[in-house]
Every structure is written in C-alpha cells, then in structure tokens.
Length: 232
Image: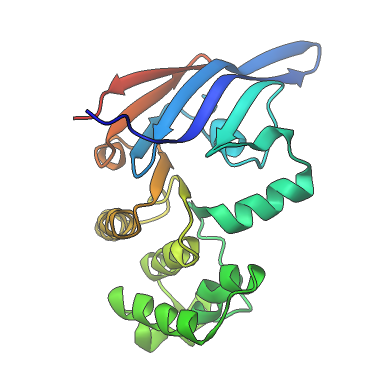
C-alpha cells in the first residue's frame, strides 16, 4: 500500500490567550497530518478553538509553540508578508458570511485571486466563465453581491476560493448563514470542486450534517483535537 502524501502537518501546536490575570489554553499540543486530496471536518461547540485552529493552519495567526508545515514549508517561520503571499498562491477560503467585495461584480470577485497572483489572462477569463456556467450563474455575473441571494453569494465565494486551484481550501462554517436547501447545494458544490481539482479541504463546522462529507472527522475538546471518524 502506497503511503499517502501529507500536505499539512501540525506538530505540537499550542496557543494561549491572556484574559485578565488568567491564561486560557485554546490549543494544547495539537498534532495532525492531512493527506493530499483529503476532506477533513473539525467540529466542536462555539468557543472550542475551531476557528483559532483554522487560522493557525492557514498562517493567519501564529502559534505560541509548535510547527505548521504545508508541503515542505514551515509557514509559522515565515514573516507576515511571506505568509500573506503564500496564502494568496496556495490557499483558498470560504467563510460563513461570504466576504465578497461589495463594489465588485460577481465575476470580478471570482477574478480577484487571479489578479492578485498576476495571472488574469485570456485563458483564465474563459475558465472563470466556465465556472460561472457550471454553477448556473452566468446571467448574474455582472450583478453586485447585494443583488444576489445568500446561496448565490456563497457559490460565488466558493468559485473565488478555488479559481486559482489552491492546494488547500479552508471553509469556516460555509453553510452557517444559509437555509437548509441552499446549504445542501453549497456542500454539493464544495465536494464537486475539491474532487475535480484534487484540492484538500479542511472544513470547520458545528453541524454534524456538514461533517458527514468528510473523510475524517475531528472534535475540538478542551484544546485537544480528538479523532471521531477514521477514513474508510
């Protein structure tokens, strides 16, 4: 059996926040290996440290100790600017509240990562058009976010997150602001997109229904990452 290739490793990652005279341990010596092309779900109650962990994995925040390795790069040893550039090229993000730029059209929002990476050429413009067609939003491509429904905004946000074909896709409560039907549609789209591009997806959620799409499920419990379901 071939050994699976790791794309993300957490080695003894800890994070402590000061609250007045007390210290709160949010992440306590967390270890994790994520394989290329895998879908990982992290569940837990509000305030359990799920989003903090995601921010560590993506280099948005820094641990107090430990290593975070993406492919062969220890990202927590990079400068803030270097981490920003690394995220821009290798990572994508989907958020609960969409985070679309209100002054850009749907199509312009999708194109933004390509512009930031200086690769918005004719071929990629055609690719953006094909993505819009895939999710049935070609006719709304010139609409601004406030002219789209919540489900439509989240579909645009997913396209923006995957348009530059990132190695890692992070989703933080991606269905948390949607009704049940729109949420299911978004989950199906996420699954199709990561399978089509062989992208590794790490999804943070409080929903067990969302977690069911994952190969492995973990729970944040008192600063520890506990595996609940193993890959098949």
